[in-house]
Image (cartoon, rainbow, N blue to C red; front, side):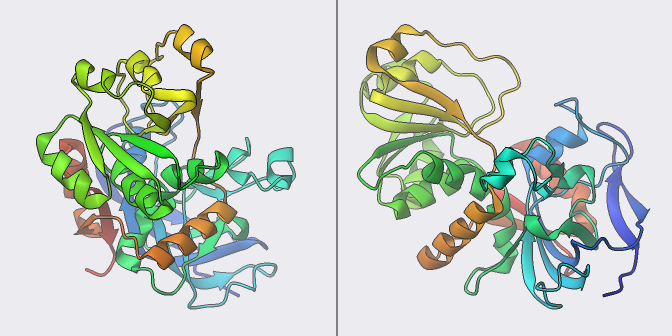
Length: 339
């Protein structure tokens, strides 16, 4: 199927620069590629990190955006199972090598040759292109306006539930009630777990309980954290700042696990003896594979879970990022092309 090979986008031309209207000229649509009209695109803190080159991996001009909900408009000859008009999602990766050991095991999210959507053709645009293996069909019953954040924030906190076999009988704690944390609370509650939220905000305590937490603890009160000694099977950290990790290790049961999904740039410190004595462990994970994303979307549709979002027209992308940087968003931001 033919395609218009010009994409109109909002790009940044240098680290930390403003968004500018920008046109991208593309070649012919690849055999396994799919082209989408962007309907909605979430705004993630990872977009900000890449735009400002916090991780030292950015390239400019950059069209960010990796929580894309779009409508199929064109397909390569091998991707014809994606029919025009289908609503699909695109997350952090827009393609995989498909030949490495991780890909062959179905762990596409661990592919070292995975192509970042942000570094190819991100969702802050009227169209995106991606390899067919990176796309997921959005099931009936999911609200399209708020679905984008599921494709990064949602899968980031859902993936550990699958990878580490979290059981409905487990006691699980979530550190940080923000873009990732609020989804973790909803997922874990629906999963059947007893859920505790670690937060430093009195206001967020009430919100955490409304989102699915059964209890809250003050993350800035060492005595309160110590009171939960040996309480949790699994603690998931969604924050991007360093905390007193030894306190959280001691809050784990024997064989408990402290898991990181929040991207902390600086090295973290912890003592080994609490881990040795209790056979506790520390782990981390990225987003999930397309197959796990499909499982998550089915779970979300079944339990009627929706991220809490604030909507901006895509033309107000600069204002949306100012709001993101203020730390006052509740809890995810979505750009809409329906002006």
